[in-house]
Length: 174
Image 1: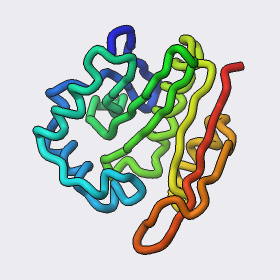
Image 2: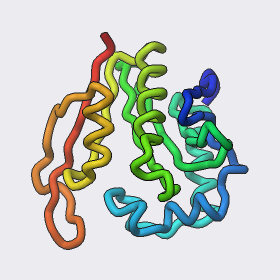
Image 3: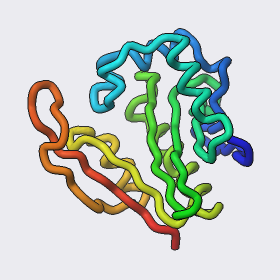
């Protein structure tokens, strides 16, 4: 994750996720059925070891794994990832605001905008992201950040016993 400078606005700060960020609160987010309701993380049980293995997978790669912090008090409130394919100028972004007390407060939007703008200003020509159709908060983040619906995978995953579409969004550099 070298080369990532850390980013900040009035709401959030983004910095590389480190082993010190593997806390009981973080593991609680990953193992919370409501937090992971629209993520395939819901099918796994996470431990300190599995989180450390995931973090280690970023070593020596162009990909980013970031801690989202509340800018006011530096409290960890979530994570972001950016899987980058430099040869194609692509970055696929993911986000989890795990701290439920911050849901609906604009923290996810601020974090998404910060990372998106930084990636687009630093060699990324196309950003992508996807979500289940029922994840209306994520759809709003995509649309408010200037992304457009690129494709729909009809009835692609089963959520709570019912087939659900996956919506794939994209944004190109200006």
